[in-house]
Amino acid sequence: MAILIDEPRWPAHGRLWSHLISDSDLDELHAFAAAAGIPRRGFDVDHYDVPEDAYDRLVRAGARPVDGHALVRALLASGLRVTARERRERRSH
Image 1 (tube, rainbow, N blue to C red):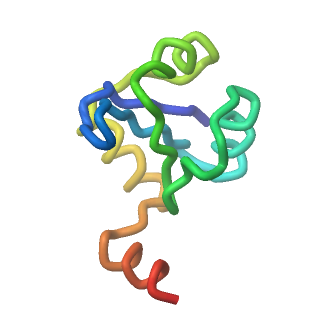
Image 2: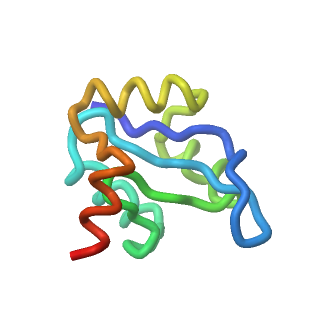
C-alpha cells in the first residue's frame, strides 16, 4: 500500500494544487491525511486536493511523488477511481 502525490500543477483559487491518493485503500488515505493535518474538506470522492505549500511536507511524511499520469494509472488500478460522471451524480443527490 502506498500514498501517492502528483506535482502541484492544477490551478484553482489563486494557487496550484496536487492530488493525494491511496493506491489501495481509502481508510489508509484518510488516516494519512489526518495525521498530516489535511482537512477532510479537501477530500473529493477518491482523492484529496492539497495546496502546493503542503507538497514537500507530505512527501517528507511518506507520500510518494509521481507524475500525473502515474497517479491516474494507480488510482484506476486500485479500483477506487470515481469517474467525472459518477462524481456529478454523487453531488446531485
